Length: 452
Image (cartoon, rainbow, N blue to C red; front, side):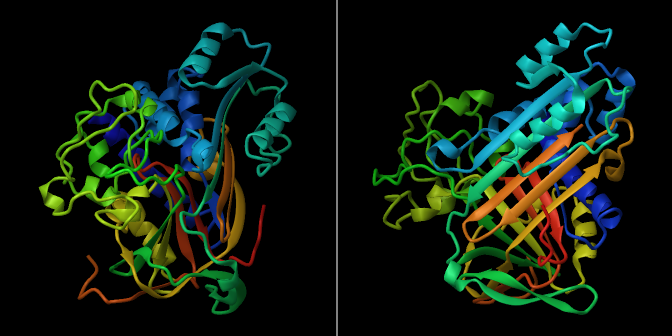
């Protein structure tokens, strides 16, 4: 359907922007930004008082056909991706949208106030700009984003500022053992290397090898209580199903935001996406979060749903949540530029390269890092509106802390063991797996450089 296509377009655009940024301003340096945050701020701006030429420029930049389409994608992202999941142990997410207008503007601000507060759930203020906005970005990113707007960015000509602040803190589904973290060599492009702490594990990992690169997916803990009830992964509030088929319209029982107020069990993405999920009963008229079905998961899967805690059927896999961090590691030590180009020029690349099965690992090491970066709209190739953006991502053994603010198959036989040693430049993403929304994307060329 058009909504799914529009979301896919934005996910492709996230990679195109990454390629632009990584080959220009941020060439061969650590950098991170949040496509979701930038798209949110621009969507606000497209509906604002800037007139049709600004709206047209934004639509063109976001490769979108209409403001309605932008708003549809935005509302889906707000309800599914930006919803906070921390109450039941899932990721802490806070996304806040804001629109500020200069007090003296000769327009009817009440109409816009209504639009932004009701449709976008955005805060709307007539304010004295710069100090307020920097404080706002800091407050809504747990203090990770400071001084988003540089001196001189707001002048007496500034009339409207659109903002989106996004904060994400997730715990790994399986945390790393700190005692296993050891220093190792990370190879830089210039042929030298630096010593940095690498996290390590001998547990099975979601890894898949492709031609020229490998992909690692580390799921975030989704939250919820374990249960021994047969075939049901607890009566927990869970507003989305993972996997491509749900979003491609082959799931007639789920309609928009209806789903968000009900509880149903986790479904393993591999099953949903392979189309082997022909029936689910109990969504239709049951408003109370009950969920019942009388058949395993359809014939294609050749296995029934067992007790979710004892390892039959799906076992622990069933508890999979919806947010993951992805690492894209080129085989060649200097292969990242080419890999990013390939990713950006392949429509649907992200959905087409998701590791769905855990593999035994012989060597598995990824570096700890903390990076932060700021950029402007011009550096993304967007000149029609002043846009300032900062993002920060840190990963350690427990998980990830990230924040952003924006103002406006492989060849040959499968080896028994795989290796994933991220000891040379790589790309990472934080993504919501149902919609595919890219919350953060970044590249690491030297994890020894810590920035905030």
